[in-house]
Length: 84
Image 1 (cartoon, rainbow, N blue to C red):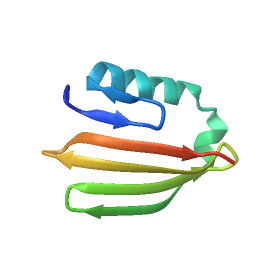
Image 2: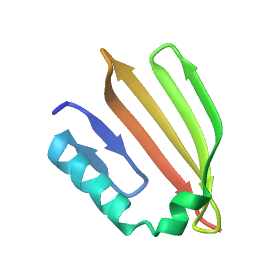
Image 3: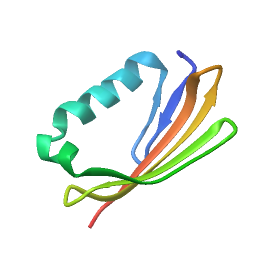
């Protein structure tokens, strides 16, 4: 929604335009080998909160996402990728 947020260590993206631009840049910047290496290590859903730990080695050794969902819409997502 226009009220949704994606919070990263570098910036908070607000609203559909900024969030779309963030994911568009992320997806276009990822090599095809990234997707071959992508693996979800942990997935926990409790009520309206989802928590993911994933990797795409050697590109991303570990990353986390936390999502808060309401009425089938993501209100807030946090994302952190950990470097080697």
